[in-house]
Length: 606
Image 1 (cartoon, rainbow, N blue to C red):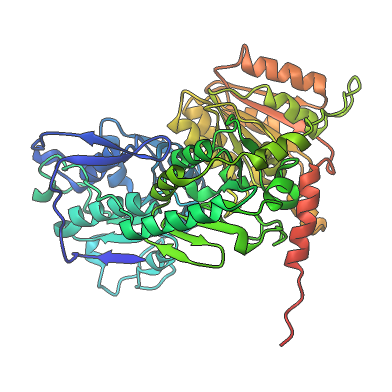
Image 2 (cartoon, helix red, strand yellow; image 1 turned 135 degrees about the horizontal axis):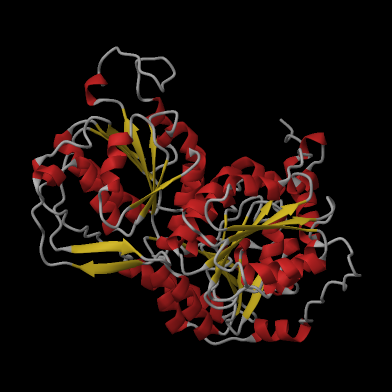
């Protein structure tokens, strides 16, 4: 982690006028420019420079909560053409919204006030760090004259040390800039933003509250766009890794390949699909990589998630004599309590900049995108695993038909949800049983899909839905949120209405924290039931376009979906789905028992 306070040692002046700007799929696109423009003194301020930089890199919306230390800065962000301030109900949701925005645009930003705002947004920034998302976290800091004094300020813990917030951010951001001097402000801001793009991690920028509106010569010209040096593979290491991997895989009888979540940060989704085309291997994804690989690929066999995999997928992967995992994360959740039936000696593990083959050898400084591209040229076509899958595959059964006015079942709900999915929709799945039910959805080409598996913070989806929908207004977001999670962050449905979003929220009301129940039950997993549709009506309060429905059976669900996609297609639609407290997916039952067993392992003998 790098921390910069005050001046930094060097200033790298770009040698050309090129900006590297994350696109909607997370790749880096290049925008050429030929001239820079002189800026009049009233606009050549720190605040306007920061605003221009955000617009340059593709941020058109900053999710903010005002506080006395950031108010002047917010004025200058507002004054920038092309930049919109989205006022959120709390800092946590502002951070979650920046997370959701970054998943679509490639970068996001939030702005909060000193300490009380900064410590509130920490949880969201930690989640973005775990998911490799570049989020620019901007904090309005104390007056520059107060640094180095013995003064005690409000919004602090009552000590004359202002570094508490900074120290908290050091472990969950890849760069921290404390801007309390105009002479090096330009350098610090540019270094922070460029580092976020290069590392694909959040950064922290604190700006003293008295500096945002002051002109300075370093801000007197339109900022020269960033020129980010691309990372390069070691050619000799790349060649050796490809040769060793090709030899390993070409000897195998029934190899398979599995995509992991780090495909996104490695910008290797396209190369991974190209390798699948060249190899003919059966193709699967880990649960947290759903949406990164096209599910309409002819050799796609589903989600590999150990005991809770898509039907027939685990059998093919775990019986293979060689498997290539591109960008995997093997944690207790993705491994179903460490119960995957995989053998290291059969695996090629491809990380963003490293390749390990079996129990060795390992090759560093080899970029995943380059490795997969070159491997596709060396691999022999082998369709054996996919042919085996085709032989054993049996089409998935349909849920039992509901009796008239029978209480709604979750599997019936998602049967109807499947019909809603198109290239113009995106799915946001909240932590909980929605993880498992949404995994079973078959995504059409172009349909977005996001969930937060590594960090797994309940309540994430409300803010993330706000941010994702703001980033791609041409898509209709379908959010699946449990009642327990919704109670954590419900307020920012208000912001969705202010932004005139047309999301459909399916609130799954089963009376508690169902995912926790399946891991370890107790009275603490039962929550107070709310009248959720009445709550949304109260938030709506006659302002904006909003429609709500409460459904108890399939007939009501069908009617609600028809209304949401018909007369109310331009509204934010909130459908509360009442289901039995024990109505869960079979995958959650299996996963919960295995994770419970992993959590309850006794201490090793000393």
